[in-house]
Structures are given as structure tokens and as C-alpha cells.
Length: 410
Image (cartoon, rainbow, N blue to C red; front, side, top):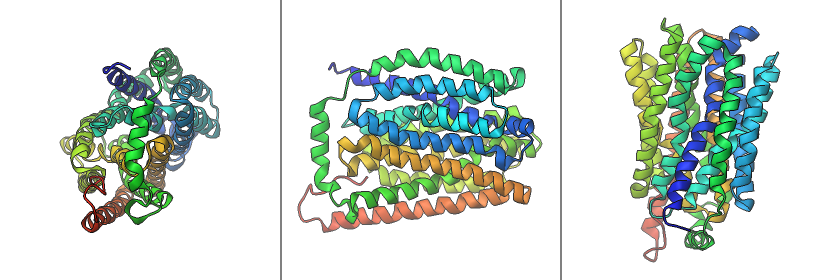
């Protein structure tokens, strides 16, 4: 395999993640028009997004396990057909139930799910010395999608309605994604994967004093906690801005700025993870996110909202990639697909839970104050978990009997 092919693979993964991310942001922006068309509140209107995210996360585990066995090409081809099919079915939905089924099942579970965790896991197998940076670049596609799609989709919603927009989006994704999938044909180099797995097995037998599955559970709980906090601005920024008396297009611009800043944050966090490890990166990102959530809660002017949106993107963009780095440090490479998929599934479930909870709290109280407080509390729980795990690493390194027995802090 030529030395430049991993870069081609990385760029292909970035493009596929950006295209696949259209489903996530379409389900965010359709909240307000869906609530109006189906005659439901914001809590119920948040369900399509929640169902998409649950399907997206669960599908990531299934697609990741398939990729561990047969490579990423088959999941990529399947998803490139099912995501457009889901958009087409959603465009014809007559009830909120049918709409949720199309977005959660076809778009999420069987469609876009290949374009997140499985692609990240695949990229991690092609890079070693700069794995954190490569993972950061690949996973930034999710936020690059958030920069590109919200303004485009919101304008199309305003001009043509959400149903016609979903039809156009289906054909665009199908035409663009299928050719890219075939660039993922080669499997990861067996020698490199075996070497990487062997180097981490001695640590991963009892990582940080936990069994492997118990550590996986702790990582998953941390993922839910951070993403409940993360989802509040990402899912509800448009209706929040409307409630403050500003236009929906301005809210979509804030979401684009938020996620655009997240692109830079994800790449920077990958670079940082190569130097200080995934756990320290997680702790830093979680702490910054909590501070900006407080800022957003009190922002009520356009300049403050735009500035806080950018700051939020810069603070939280690097949190999710750090879970992939943590998993790749403490678990064998041969389990990368399903373990990274599982960790990221719980971050996605946290996004779904947080988006739904914020909508319900708004319906109960008539404002987003309680939703922001809820997000901050969950965020603090994530910080506490990261701190405890980091203490365990520090203690284990101090008690190590032989040099080189432990890997750098992850």
C-alpha cells in the first residue's frame, strides 16, 4: 500500500461523514416546521431528532461490528442507499410516527450510521504516530456538515418547504456518496493492526483497574453526560433564538458558526490528544463546555449569542473525538469498530436524550432556563468521571514497577 493512500482514505472518510451528516442536521432544523405541520408541541417535535440519533448510534455499533469482520466498504455501500431512501420516505410521511420511523430507521439505523463511528474506527487503524490528529480530522466531518447544511437547508425549507428539500437531499446524497465508497475498498494493513493490538493488550487486560467491559461502561456513562449538555444549544438554538425575537435564519447561522468552530476544535483536540492524551483532552473540553453553557443561558442580544455560539463550538468540539482516542489506547485494535461504535453510540444517545429533555422542560416551564440548568448538571457529571479516571491513571503510573509498563495518559 502506497504511503499516500491513508491520506486519501482520511479525506474520503471526511467527505462521507460530511455528506452523511445531512440527516442529523435536517432532523434538527425540521423541528419547528414539523411542530407546525403535525400540530404538536416542541417536546413531541423533538422526537424525530431523538429517534434519528438513537438509530444513528445503534447502527454505529452494528455497522462497526460488521466493519471489524468484513471491512468498511459493505456498510458504506448499504448506508449510501438507505440514507436517501429514508429521506424519500420521510418526505411522504403523513403522521409524526411515520416521520420518526423514516428518520430513525432508514436514515439513522441503516443509513447515516456507517458515516460516523465506523469511519472513525477505520481511520484509527491506518494511523499510529498521529492517530489523534487523523481521528480529529475525520470526525470533524460531522461538524463540517453542521457548518454547511443548516443555512442551505433552512433556506430551502423557506423557499420550497421541508418535504421537497428532503427529496432533493436524497438524490444529492445518493449521487455523491456511492462513488466515494469504492475508495474504501482496501482493508487495513494486517501487520500494522496486529502490531498495534499486541502493544496495547498488556494494558487493556485490566485497564485502570477495571475489567474491559466495566471501563467501557464508565466511558459510555461519561459520553451520555457530556452530550446531554452539548445537545441543548445544538438542537434548540433556532427555537431559542425565535423566542428571543430574532429570525430563524439567524438561529441557523448561529448553529453553523457553532459547528464551524467545532471543526477547528476537533482537529486541534486530535493534535492535543497526541500530546496530553484523551482523558486530559476530555476533562479540558468538558470544563470549557460547562462555562459556555452558563454564558449561553444569559445571552440575550445578537452579538452575545453569535459570540457564545462560536465559543461553544470551540469548547465542545474536541470532546467526542477524545472517546475514540481513549478506546484505542485501552482496547485492542481488533475491537476498535464495535467498541468505538459503542462509546460513540452513547454520546449520540446523550444528544438524543438531551434534545428531548430540553423540549419537554420547555413545554413544562415555558422557557429554556430549566433546560440549560439540566444541561449544566449533566456536564458536571461528565467532568467528575473524567477527573476520577485521570486520577486512576496518575495513581497507576506512580505505582508502576517497570518503566514502559503503562502507555501515556489517555
